[in-house]
Image (tube, rainbow, N blue to C red; front, side, top):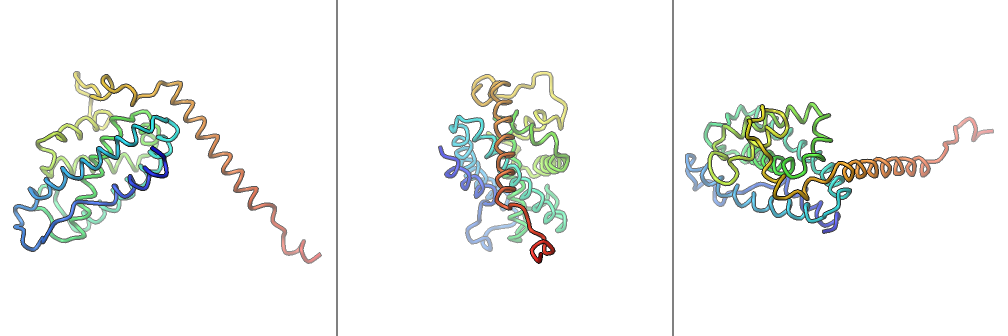
Length: 229
């Protein structure tokens, strides 16, 4: 799967959300149940996107995609949190009816879940970026707390993702029986230390070369006083 094909799809996935049909006709107290069904559809799309990312089978490509993807994901999460806090939306309250607030709610729930999927399958790459970013840590802590109170994750196949993610990231204490469910059965998601470090070195070299190219393109500047001589 080519980088140029998969990345736009992943970016669109971060910004999209489930939509209601004829929301005026839906009862307020049934809004959450309707959203849960839409959430299941969105999760299938996320799983397909993640499958494509895994099938790249190239640590360097995965490194680049996850780098860009996490920046986009946390920007969406930060903006959505601001909307919800400004509107004083309680996560355990009635499902919002205002479109802007509904979109923010969906973005928080869906991107928090998707981040959990990514960190459990690519822990080394995610830790490389996440562990050095205190703002991301604060955002995902808030996101997990918000999601835990929504009722969206109470049952079903996604009920464990928040708990496992929190333990993997060190946000909550690891239980004695904790294990990443993808580590044993799908070890290809965990590149060896040598492979991973090589990918990091290659990416660092690529960035330095790109910076040098930009400097060469700019070239030396001639000051106004020199040009007048």
